[in-house]
Length: 599
Image (tube, rainbow, N blue to C red; front, side, top):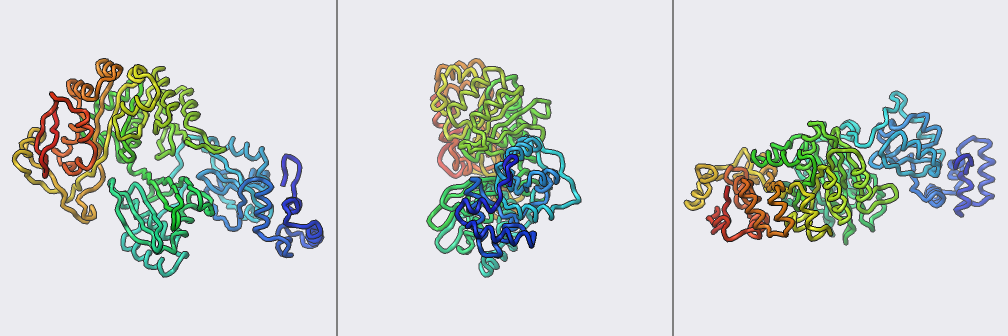
């Protein structure tokens, strides 16, 4: 081991850590002169130290995690990240790619870390320590047939082939695997985890929840906005499942008493899938939550596929192509804000605009777009949201996307950036109105908020009726008369259930949108703190659809049901913004009455 030019020997480190005596080291060195073996192997063979003592000493000496390369599975594509000659020169082995963990004989070698950062721009390097014997044993086994490829650039998109492949698994296969896992124990954990991931993606789940109980582990999928209980897993497999997922995420599997977060990627049916992982200690184990970012969702969801009403889609296109201003996308978690903003960015990029995103985490890879990962609680190698946003605003870019506006300091930077002429798309996670959230939490004068905003988008997601089994029906006379104004017949659709939708009657989700550009009239109303009712009234005078209007249109066109609309807070938001001269009341399917749309 060498720091600069000074060599630090393993024997000295072990003595310094108090796990080896000088007399023992002298005996081992004498034997080394005869056998020419590595000193660590000799010390272990003579019974002077164990692998655990070497690990303890190395971590104590260097203050970083020890990696036993002999027991570490390293993907071939990771080994090809750096030239073989460079690995030999600095005695280092790349181990993981999520955060590029590199095992070095000397993790204090600053020159080695700098060289990696130069070659792999934008990659977060996490040093670890390994023994010299481990390094040479691993180095000798490096694949010789393929040289290291060109250095990736921050913001570039890795190919799907750079990730491990998850095979397609049917429901019957998963059930059979669970039965075998109950009998076979931990040996079946790896294929079981792969099967769980495959099953969730095939079901179009957006979240996986793994909840440990006293005698079992409950598996849940969030499908189309609903949490569904999928299966019970034997409780004895809970810890193995947790550790396997942590390994995939590149996390410390022994840290069970503190929450952990991470991300990892793989390919499924030839496409990239990313998962964001979070664990939380509980009474009977660790609760795991995984968010699934399936690139198929982004690739198939253009703006016209998301915003079904053509006039609303055109209004949104016109809004985001303005030369500057802040466009706010508001809604609760899981309302589709990121997908809609990504779709807008894809169109802007295709039109030649330069785009930067600031996200935590990066949910999907966007070709041609610079994506900046940030962290709300940054570690030694992480960039904070405020720093990342400040750096992005300093770049000469036309369009900026901020994944979520959280802190007032972030909002204030966005307002200043919008007033300087940037087009900024920003997400706001809230169940109340976008303007209410901005006025109450941003700590920015209302007049500045009004002047900086180019427009706002409020959105919700509801379940979409399955196109293969939905049925037409005629509601009661009053309801039919009401919807006849929107679809000409008054007929509506209802769920039935088939094999393709797992007998639910629903398949996927459809967005409900309210897009309001800030005209001088609306800007003045906002600056004067006018109530939402007056803003809605002005929007209707401009021929715009409110969130409630859009929801009723979706029902009338057979995309969803009235019951789905009632399940959300859309009608509550509409009631909060109602005015005496606004729309009247009309009967709703299966209920007494509901606010009817206008326009």
